[in-house]
Length: 540
Ligand code: G16
Image (cartoon, rainbow, N blue to C red; front, side, top):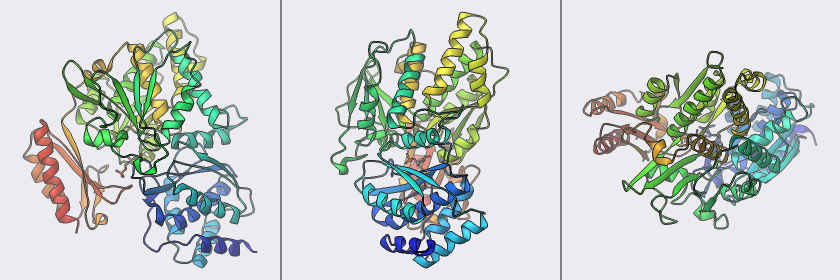
């Protein structure tokens, strides 16, 4: 069979359901039964991408992360473990929307010609999936695309999303001075555990941490990871809860980071216990939210992505200062419009660090964070990481310390570059980072919460007939379309004190999101409801 015949035959086995598909915030994401043909086509694109980039391994992750169990998704990971270069999203969209199997082969060949890709060059794609049952079918479609294009492929089976990102980078850097770690799931655990021990030298974690795993892949993987922590060196008591991966329907149900963030309360199961330190991962373990019920004030306190961001920026900023590198390294923070205004104020006014706002999607934040030597990026929903530039990593390793304090700071910074996943936001790695910082500062969750006071806020999900009529500008803080809608939102915002609100179409769900913050909780709620009403009226 010719190349074209193989592609067409494979596509016929995994037909596309005709409709318009778009590479969204985190790849193609929708009801799983629409995704088989999409995944086949994504496989073709991943093979092209590998051939374009000198046969480096490309990753494909099959997950719908925080979405309900019936959804699934497919996204592409670039050789260094970051998200697919945005320029290529339109190529992915073009391939996926090919009307027929024959058109698909034509578009595939046209892309190869336009992008000067040698279709005879070797190619490699590695992939993984979360615990959704639909992942099986999608992986088969993906593998068929890779076979049809003579692409070497490795199925890593069930993984967290950040583990797949790790494996992509580890594969491409294997045997080089920039080796990212052993090319295996165990290599990932070993790297994190070793770095955790190094950063925790002489420190201790005072009490137990309950980790809600959203009944997703994070449960079994966290339990596996914990086996690699030498409890004699770093006693770390973790209670893993909501880790049922055998009943697919409970994935992300009344649990997980998205539940805690949007509902602003603890999952009902297990019954919340005042004073217990808790955190939640999401369905593919790339988001993290901390919380507890303060036993003294009887108030639920949530420590979200903004809090993790400011905690990390302040800790790493202090270490860089103690390491004598403040004048040599640029530290910055990247947020989105969802960041609580109080957090932005704290970072710019108290920590005196620059903040850049980008559109939603870690792909945007990651890119901007790479412009700093230490780029801290977190979305308020708990998705993020800290990136270190090669200059920063070099400085941590090569600077000759002049005092024990400087040595300790340099050693801790060097260990943090291994502890913090450099490819993408990683809930397990971020959780270890938070534990390390709290242990170094000798803080409990109340101390952390006291750094600043959040402005009351509310996030609302609004289903509309046509979310495509909404287009944003100014890093999603304003709507440019439909014309007139923003003016109505502005009118409402003006009526409230210290208020801010925006609306945008979700790139992972078929819905609009409305965010509002204001001086009091009731005003934030009222404003969110009014803006949601405006969005409903315009979204027809
Ligand atoms: C994905 C993205 C995040 C984004 C979230 C929600 O997260 O990776 O960057 O914040 O979707 O996006 P949207 O508001 O466009 O639906 P996850 O955890 O679902 O992969």
